[in-house]
Image (cartoon, rainbow, N blue to C red; front, side, top):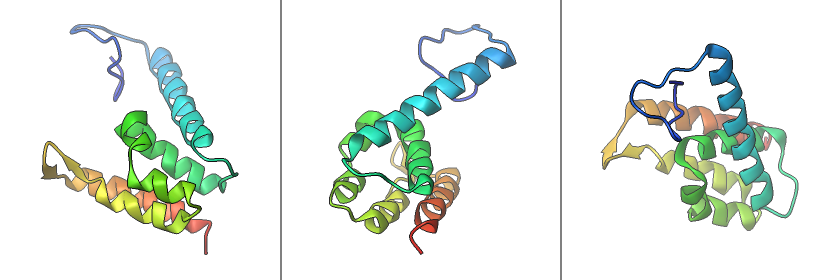
Amino acid sequence: MCDGYTQGVKLGDMASPQRCDALTEQEVRRALSVVDRSVSYPLPDEVRVALSSFVYNVGAGAYANSTLLRKLRARDIAGACQELDRWVYAGGRKLRGLERRRQAERQLCLSSLH
């Protein structure tokens, strides 16, 4: 099946590259919608993109219950962006791949604030 897409997938499922692209676009749009609905004020595009990447990766539920969102709702965008650095663990282990992803998301998130 498609990289990163697991909803309803069973062992042996196959999809065309075009179908995978459509599924990825659908999930990215969903993550962007979650971010946009989570605050009552407009966010800079770089923040929206960085946080949508985060939501795409960790899920809307984890985002909804995060200190990151609490800071964002308090209009502490820089503080919310810094929270991304905390999300580098999977199964109780710090993962280098997640560290790199969060670093890129944080840099993008903060880029519009300088």
